[in-house]
Image (tube, one colour):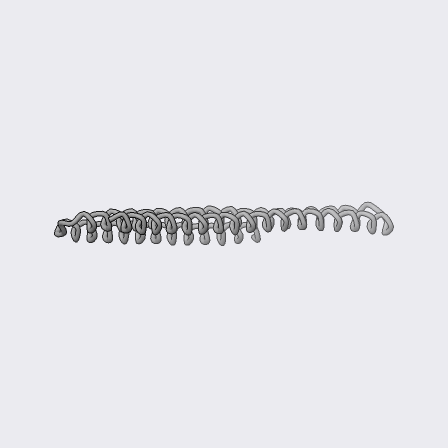
Length: 175
């Protein structure tokens, strides 16, 4: 029963995450399109070159920020799905190991003496500890990857915004 409950929880989490991602992406795309249309419509009524440059820069900034937000959402979502998958693997491995331990102990109790039982139980405990430790390391590594991806994407956003601001300032100073 435990693995099937885990599968149900994982499916629900993945569905919720996908729905959230789709909603965020749709909202970002709608906002980008609306802002771009409003700015371009405003530019249609202007006649100066400065206003046209400002319109182009604003449209580029809005589109770039929209793309970056979508990329961040997708990267974080994929990373979270990887972490959830790693957690599922850990739970399944632990359940399998516990079942194997119970079977081995039952067989040993029936067949072997008390001294041999102690040796087998110690060996099984060592195996369980190793498996759980490796599984936890896998999950922690997946979380570290999520944090690194999010930091790198945020750094990309900062760089893009700085470049756009510099371009706007230089363009304004040249005129």
